[in-house]
Structure formats: structure tokens, C-alpha cells
Image (tube, rainbow, N blue to C red; front, side):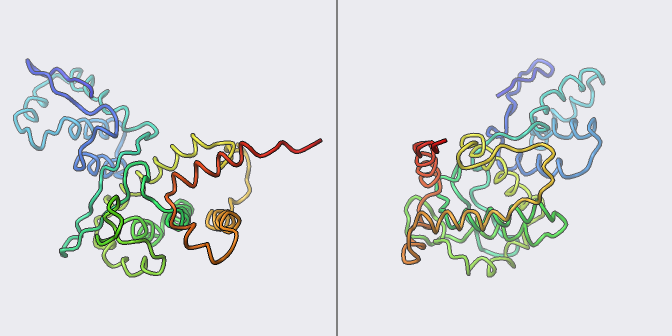
Length: 263
């Protein structure tokens, strides 16, 4: 946490995404998508980090400061404008407006994501990046990751993943505010980059500058890996239910132990 001295009082202020509350995280994501000019954006972000909605006296005090003093405080928001590096699940439960339904999300760092679930999510994430103007891709990503409670796994409150059930959750997901769905995508992207950094050179390729080729659909790539490792269609479902971190660890180990090709 960072510290901010305002008047005679010191306030603890989040200094990275993992230290945000759920409400602060949603507010930050909403502001990052608001297309504000950078100075105004940093001021608004600083207000969120200082939690002025719950501190009306602090809000009034901030506007009595000199411009230079307020400008110095906006440095607190610098981390919000940098590449996000967090895997903590800040939105474990989404409450669907107008319904009693609650949708539960994956654990920190995709700890309980299954391989089959990842394959579908990765495809929807790819589509959402390629066609951001199509909200259905974002909705499918959220509907894949978030599910009602009812699973048999004590470590995962969600119903077991079933690809055919994803479309049925779209009406519920569509009720969620846009910035909530964007926050799910934001967290997914940050978790994904953490795994890319960890497994670049084995499971993920390093980006190639100037490579104009259209990237392949990741669903096809990961499905081929699933088929190869499962060995038989009879084992596809069983392999797809394995936790993703275990799959990644195993694949990385196999690739690194693979003999170098003879020249």
C-alpha cells in the first residue's frame, strides 16, 4: 500500500491492482474505458483510490488544496495506467441485477480453471480482442468463466463446466453492467499474461514485431494439444477436466525434457 499525507492525516492507498477492493476495481476499470483526457483521468482515479465516496470530508478537503498539491497526489494513480500485473480474483461473485442469481468466478490465478474451460475462454477472449465492437464475444467469455453455484468440487463453488450450457447463461450475463463484464476481461488478460511470461518459449511464442500474419484461432491449437495428450477420444473429457495450472506445468516439463533434434 502507498501512503498519502493530506492535512494532518495519513491515508493508506492501494499501490497495485491486487490491493484494490472490488468496488474500487470496478470503478477503475470503468474510468479506464471512459475515454477521458489523461489529466482528468488521473484525478478521477486518485479519487477512487482515496475512496472519497465514503469520506465526504476528505473530498471537500481535496478541493481546498492548491492545484500543485492535487497534481502531486495524482501520482498515486500511475499504476492504474501501466500494464496490469495481478492474478488475485477481485470479483469472486457477480450479482445479476433484477435476479436473485449469483454467478461465481474462477479462483486466483485460474487455480480451478479446467483445461476444457480454458480452451473455450481463450477462444472467446481472442474473438473479443479481434472484434471489440461485437459484445457477444465478451458476454461469452464471462458466461464461460462465471457460473451459478452447485458444483461437487469443494474447492470450486461453481457448477461443473459444460460447453453446451454457456449460451444459456448469456441472458443473465447481458444484465450485468458493461464495465463489470470489461473488468472480467481485464482480469482474464492479466492472468493470461502472467502465464505467457512464465511459459514463453515452451507453451507460448514470443511476439514477433512486424509479423503481419493473422493469428490462428487458439481453440484449434489447444484442442490439438488436448487430443495429442489424451491419446484417445475416450479420454478427451477426462483430460479436459484437469486443472489448467497442472496441465501447463506438465506440458512445459515435457517440452523442456524433449530431446534436442539431431543436426
